Image: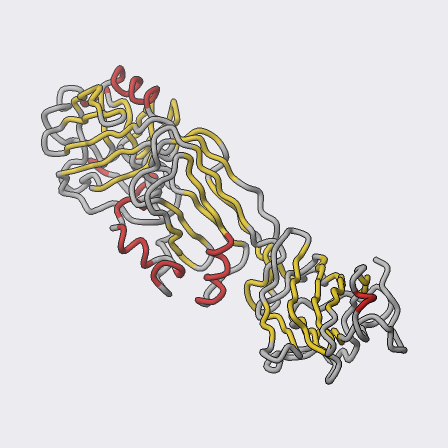
Length: 421
């Protein structure tokens, strides 16, 4: 970039001194040089009074950790307005002194970008002028990368959006910056919607209720170049687009031993099933389909089950709902108990024909809700998506923007074990 050399004489066209200065409480780097500004006077500037621009020559770039300041020379007039905008169209917030002698930025500059600054002035005689200046900021040395999940594609109404961060973000101020920059939109719109900090590096987003059926969800980030915390700046993020299908959900009643399947609220099937027997009771609560496998070899030893309870069986039409091994799958060996008793090791078993139908009907993001089981509740995080089991007001407590800081604990580290049946 070509920069205007340092002016050593007063030009007869404006009345400002402009510089980037270190913040009063910030640690400096010992560099006494001014930050670069190249000045291009507008057509109206020539009618104004005197201006002086200061800045280094060469290709030096501004330190984004230091604020921007514009000052009117004492006795020469006043500043009436300042606008600073970067190449992405983001305005830099600032504050103008009541007497018009000084304007300074009140937000951090973006890293690795170019700013255009327009300064409107008024001389003592009432003559107005406009000066346009531009400068570049240094790129960030440490970047916060964000990866949205799941992969782009078609999903059910229960699929949460995830954001995985490359660096831990702990402070309320830094989390505030991240949340404000991560945008999720639904068409048609969904009621409510909030991020929840699962831990320092993972956020989940969901609306108050499930996504609207047949909607389109987009997730984008405006973090690129934005300062998150001291010397940590956001990186560019690949946007995400999800297409949501019909509302498909299965209600598994462990006490009646039947599963009711609904599409958009209308019952379309009622299937005899078996769930976990005493000591292996199936988890209660809402679970989100994680994936599907036509064939899985299920071994009891993989999940610590041996002896008389051990098993080693080929399983077909397996729809996964937890990482620790709960599936909805074909269980031809227990057909006599389906609709009658609970005899599994935690999975929802059904006939091969019913399992094949379920396999073809459900997709990732669809819902399986277990009720009336003697088992514990589905974990909120870490063992799949138990997000919908969190009350909406509690969910909002996990958002810095909606309810303030929530420290919370990290989810348990669940190994992706082979399933139990």
